[in-house]
Image (cartoon, rainbow, N blue to C red):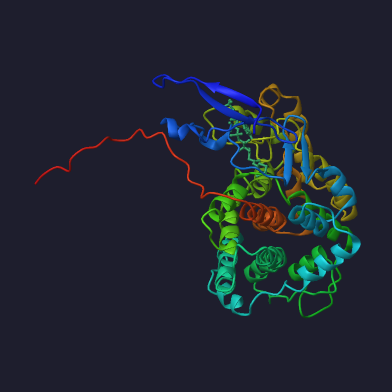
Length: 426
Ligand code: CMC
């Protein structure tokens, strides 16, 4: 029973409507408006600016303070002390694994990294120049054709198996997208390597010679995956939940999340940041670019800046900014001209009233692109890397939703179209 209550009086409704208020363990209270439909009114919240779409125990963000917690653990501590596989386990299971549980989980993931040979045939039907995100949407959706008939989503073990398969196979598909686009043979996964090492091997190895992944690059890759692993009810996760709420196949649901992620306002921003830095081309062109960004009549935005929830620095950007320095030094890219432009953009934006008044700070995508570029990941694959990192978050939310009582997601609308009218003529 909720102790706090909100009272709502609505013109045309005689009674005062009492709405329960729920308190989370942390964060703003929420007003339960579910009873409003029975009174003949709906709430109106395009873009879900003020709407909690579900109850969740997975990830917490305090956008004002720049806090991001996976299952209570701050992202900075996880980035320093944990790794992607451990975070996958944490997001899925709610607690950090013991050493044995972690080994068993890693082993489980490793033994599901191969994709069905038929998937190769699927790849060859795509144009080589296709955007890798379009191929990922198709390839991950296609997994539902291989894992459907025996899959019972009400069975927790089946859900866990689907989660492990998705975490294991999406990097394989991501690397296949790259290999296909450059005409090189697909590389089978190697179980003797760590998750991020195996990913780099599938990306950059060839059958012709030995490939030894650099530990520095593998660590940076792991950090990028970890920092992207979950972000509560963002557009792609909400899409996965909405698709999942119909009882649809989880592989198809994750494919719908990848679709939502592709847009430049969401995961596609990391690619757009690099395009922007290239367009600016030189530090001397920044003032003109900033002028364009501030011009209401110019649609150009400072990509990698701003966030729906963070109205302070994105904590993931902090971690990546520090990581970028180390990685670029290690790779001998510390004088990268794009990094210079990025640093100067950040300096100007943090001092400029336009950005200060609107709370526009660098987000995770601002620095991830620079690191990915230094690692040798092509720009059009950046959002695929984001999708690979976000997979545990998507599956954790899908799993959480299906494990609890849930309703099909079915928003309503404020209808402003034509009212009833008769079809003209006979
Ligand atoms: N550059 C310039 N102005 C901006 C920017 C930007 N990047 N972002 C927001 N604004 C302005 C916007 O024009 C508006 O100004 P005004 O009040 O004068 O009309 C004000 O700030 C509020 O913006 P909004 O569009 O209402 O904010 P939102 O919460 O709806 O949008 C956002 C958030 C992330 C879509 C937006 O900030 C944006 O498009 N940023 C660039 C794209 C980007 O980097 N996206 C990655 C987000 S982080 C990765 C992820 O989690 O997906």
